[in-house]
Image 1 (cartoon, rainbow, N blue to C red):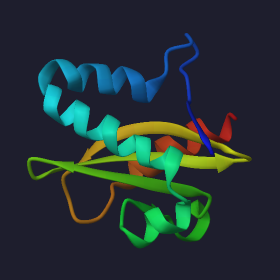
Image 2 (tube, rainbow, N blue to C red):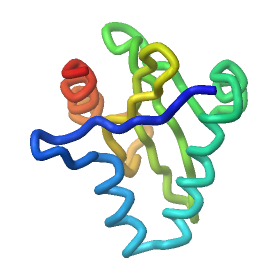
Image 3 (cartoon, rainbow, N blue to C red):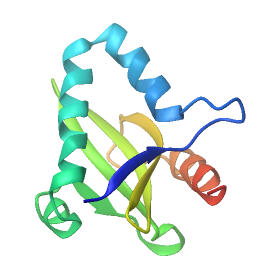
Image 4 (cartoon, helix red, strand yellow):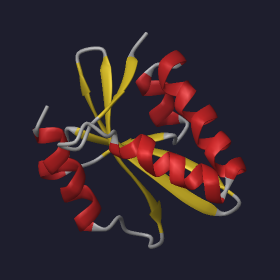
Amino acid sequence: MPEVEFCESSGGRPYVLEDLKKLGSRDPEAFRKIMDDLELLKVWPLNQLIKLNFVEQLKGRYKKIHEFKSTWNKIEYRIFFRIIGAIYWMSNLYIKKDEKTRRCEIEKAQKRLDKL
């Protein structure tokens, strides 16, 4: 089974966990939903998660990045990650507000993941 790890800031703080902590203080139910959904990464094969629309692989120059999807109370949460060996490296959590993913979020993920 794959492991889930988190990209860290230069100060050693995991970006996604910090964002989840903030979300948990504002909306504990959304926090629990995302954490439950993240458990799926550990137990279901990636191709099944893609078929069930929990995960999407980005295209073009970002094809090494995947987007994990979780929805709570009509709010769409996304976490970008890259697979290296048997580890899913999580880079950033954001709230999707538009139909198309913001390029700045993808580039933030790319920058963080390139440091691995």
